Length: 203
Image (cartoon, rainbow, N blue to C red):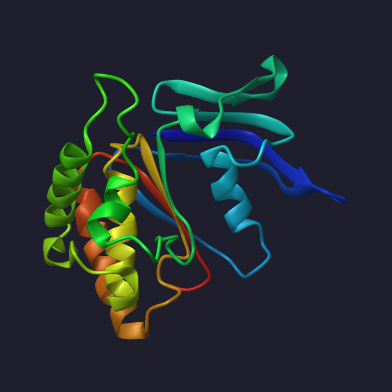
């Protein structure tokens, strides 16, 4: 579950890009926020993820308050357990698909951290869950827009996030591919319990 109350976001000379917004997304819900370019959609996603600090309001993810202005509480992004898929997907061109997905997991910094082989095995398993295990050894440049989207989604989901944020996930797809991907994503989240928020200027 994610819940925001009286959330105000501003930066630079614009103190209220978004003002007093409140919404709630329950476990397993897949919600789309639609609006034109420049309306603050990406700013809202980045604020929930922790990349921006709002000027006022509250943000709650699962059972954890991650921002409360009156308490001066701000939980940094690395502690929020939010899966974020940016516009353009953010895949590393020099890494194969399996290593792009494994990148979402921690490296071997302690005896309890997974080894490279363990991280790769987990990445392959996550790719299989999304029906793209056959892409594991390819580089991103060899993938279609829809395939890149699935790989980016796998990298976000491998961390078992409390919620998932997707920024313009259909932007690189044509109309037919958008319909197919929208249906696929809706079915994926309906089967699980991770809430998801996407922002887009077209459905």
